[in-house]
Image (cartoon, rainbow, N blue to C red; front, side, top):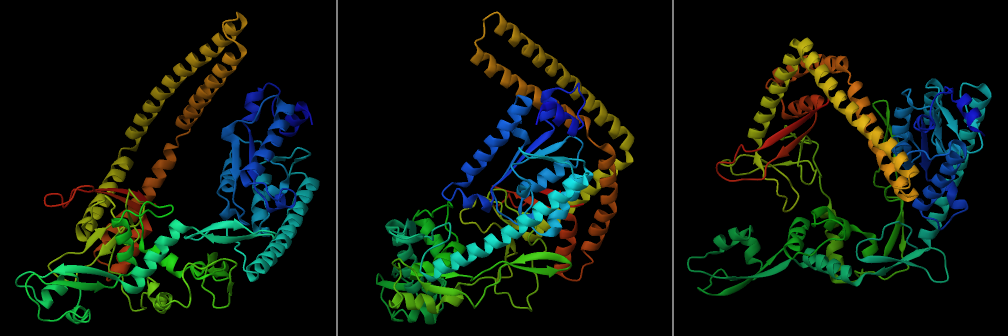
Length: 583
């Protein structure tokens, strides 16, 4: 397949340079299960490198140069649908423009092995954008009926092969689980993966350092913690109980006499839940495996893991597709019908141990978010306000004492983001929305003037970029002169040329971005947003329930970044809200 033939197929003019041609071609790489047939021990990265090398060799043989890095899309997921493949989504968006003439891949099966709907979307996108599909052996033009038929047949056969492979793999996994082998990719906390001797597959062996922490967590959850308290003059059962956030009856159950003398030392046993255990581990500066701090969910995951009791499971949470509001939604419901067998490894917690029995008896208490159907939402900003440090939704902290107001805070332990009065944040958000509305209205009313300002600004930037491009191209010409007179060696020349080409490419892309600013689109978007903002602001205080307020805010707001690092008196309203709108 020579250059002239490729140019003819891609309908590229004769005066088009090689650099321009390769900039109009995308490489798409994806790891497929099919590789496992021939490269069983090869890691994903190695497979992608092997495929990339093959495609770049084709490019060098055809054009004399490689496809640039910015035009290479690598997919390391094995999802069946377009929704599961973000890089494929980027490729489909890219080829909708006129800038891309073809997509280069090792075989057409790399593009789609999902259901017929996804295959149809991919085929239509390539067909109606007039984008060709290039493999090292053939170029597919989907405007050609024979190529389209061959393409669709290839995807259909690929789908059949995928379903067959998944069925075989699933059968193998179930067989391995029933034999007590460990098949998950990541080892559970407290263990290391170990290759079985004289057998296929993996098992687990205890990680002694992590196992000590698992045992500590188990002790704290089962037995709580004992603390000593030195009685002071005037102390009563009630005052001491208040210090430890306990009821009087709980304190007396610790075998503490209601009559004690000054300077008596009493031992108080305190039960510990998952939150208290997480905070205690953080206080001891014991680090988890990946995160910086322990959280209650990590403690629940460890105590609920079948592995620490010596079991392996399969099918406890399987992905199930359901139709909801006309859309396909993936769910992972818990199943009572799953495989659970003794693993080929030693348990950290013995099932017959008293401590383990206490933990298993408390298993139901490990579940969270057991919200009753009668629950009414109390936070109008629920799932809207985001902490900028840990990128988690901030939550409402209610107080039973009516003298205290509800607080909006970040639940991550030791997070430096300082909480604020929930009502104050709510009021500031509404004020900010009003400011956005005024800004949009001002933009629409002064559109012609704003348009001229934007155009003048863009023209100035383009002039600056053109000047920089001229300088970079002059440097490029100078490099050739320096090579010819022997000042530059070949290595120095190549290094310098590569840097200058990157610089020129970045400047050209920047110029293109500025030139393609769509003022009309910006105008239309803001014009459309104004009535929606007005409706939301006017309707907010007329809502009957907090849930309605929350839904109203969600209809116009994507998220709100909340920034506050100083607290205390005088800093109550010292926070910043950065709003991202949906409209």
